Image 1 (cartoon, rainbow, N blue to C red):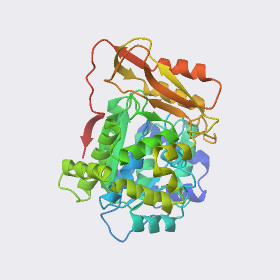
Image 2 (image 1 turned 180 degrees about the horizontal axis):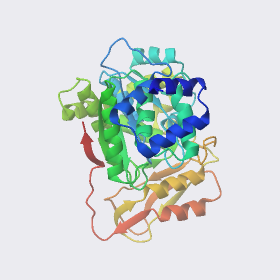
Image 3 (image 1 turned 60 degrees about the vertical axis):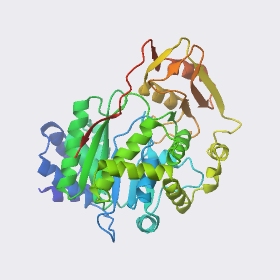
Length: 421
């Protein structure tokens, strides 16, 4: 049976679960060659609708393997659109300690992330971007394969991970793709070697399908930026699109965007591309594109008139939401903030999902006052918890163990470990 015939049987149900599971277990244990993974990914892409566009070469997207405080997509897509690219960004929801772009966007009152294919195409061609969830018609093969992988222990297979991610991006009809593959204690791939293997696999398979692909390896030990929690991350994204964002978040946005501008022929090299992305963050064009997208998808643009109206519109200033500050008991240099501990505290407050069907509270989260390399005096506040529950002592105790102070100033390094073309 060919791969095409197998995928057809997966989609139409003529191949029973038992046979699909046997195939998944064989791939899990024996692997696939790069060529076989390309064939599999193409078949999965073609199992449903594939978006088509009038101006080939301009349609791009980005994928991240997920992390804590990872709101990169939210400022990146408007910045790319402000620089002349088209971004049909189909994103996912958070599960466990990792946040989801759709959950963050749904913090905005009225904003729709469920659009039909024709709505996505019209909006992207009109204003340059859409940030939406996967439609029923895109890559139906992946839904069944992933569900069976989840219950049979075959998730951690390089060709299966690669085909799942790349098929969904390829179904967007894009010509260029950039991948942010994270490693560290709060990443899906904890070791750098595992992250590099996944990045190179996805780049190779994407190129094998005619997509210009590149990747970065980035660390996921500390939270990205200062905010963790859906509404708080929208605020930080807006700050970034107004030229006031955290240095580490801005670097990721500029480098990933610069790579896509280079791949699309919109800049001569990465440095020029990154500079163009940064300009869009500082001159207001990225933020204006974001507001266009919010309005086009039914969101309330009025909440972005001021920081106060934004916090109020996102429910952070609700009367039933409380804020509690956390102080340090000693003085010293911040040498570490454990992203996993921060994420688990947010998860306990209801900011994320422990199971797929869980309801989340988009208002709650943690706003850090410092990053690694900052100095704190004894008694200074290093974090503010926004919460609605009475278990604040337990959450505060969890967070108190996340920060580490040192007598000596640490060397602050870039999150980006390597760029892979």
